Length: 467
Image (cartoon, rainbow, N blue to C red; front, top):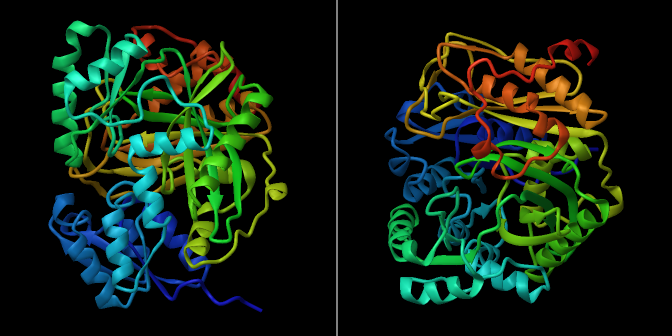
């Protein structure tokens, strides 16, 4: 006998591959869906797959996907009883979640209180300290004045890192190597974050070079049950943008991983967290220490890594939790088997990272055992210049890390996208680099290597047939 769906109709306040992913999860649960789209996205895949669709404005995101008024009007007009924000756009906007609630529409995510506490890095850092979770040397207060922040920088010791209290994505993140450059760099960072988030408060922390970026997936319900679903390593990044994620984290000692997972659960439990979320850490493997950096109160881009590693459906779980249901899983149910790697496929020049919008002339995604592709493009689709350049996520699973790498290389070779530039070749080069193969990388990997150096090869082509 089928259970009653958590909601009757869900509006997806997003676009691209994540909108497609959410639509599929809703349809599997027997929930009707509403796709919203800009005038530029009229032919987008999420529009074609949803039960119904509504145009909410012009191409620019500020006039469409970021327009709370337009989205709420669409939700009310279509009779949606819930809104899923995906990631990015309005996904971590507590004001939007509050408006949803005032209109009698469920926001599929954590409580407004959760978002306000964990969405501000200074407040989140204070919450972590209260829960006994290690934090980076620095201060848990956001600063508007450079002279006040400088006192903390001196105490922490240079180099220090400046980062926005509100928002993320690397905007405003600046490394300051000496006191002489502090005031000027602070002013530059502050202008960036004010323009991006409307909040000029900056956090000051000790800068930690050559560390790993490792995150823990958590989930909690309104009955105060909290579990973790393991870790993901997100250290391969450029300009603070993640490129490759994997689980488990290579070379991470089991005891240290256990401590991080427990710390993430304790933090989520201490703030009564009621959705899926991600607690992010920097890890100093040489010292055997980890430090809390932030919590993302939304679905992560890299959530498929955890789904494949643990054989769970995080999107479905998130929808059920928003409806007030109890977690369908207990900690003892979570099993982590094999190894999973995700490569973010962007429509951009792989060397310059300059976006490459345009017509997709042909499209052939890879397949086979343990291969998953989350994408919203197709042959004849035009990649728009107005939005993020992420067009697909390629996720593979193998019995161990080496098998997984080989499988990913085969899948990348199979992935055919013509008409636009992509970063597929860059992923091949990363996976073939000895430091990646050996698991001896850190967050500055992309800064320290020249993947496109002429005739430089770390090819393992002859091994690929062994997959």
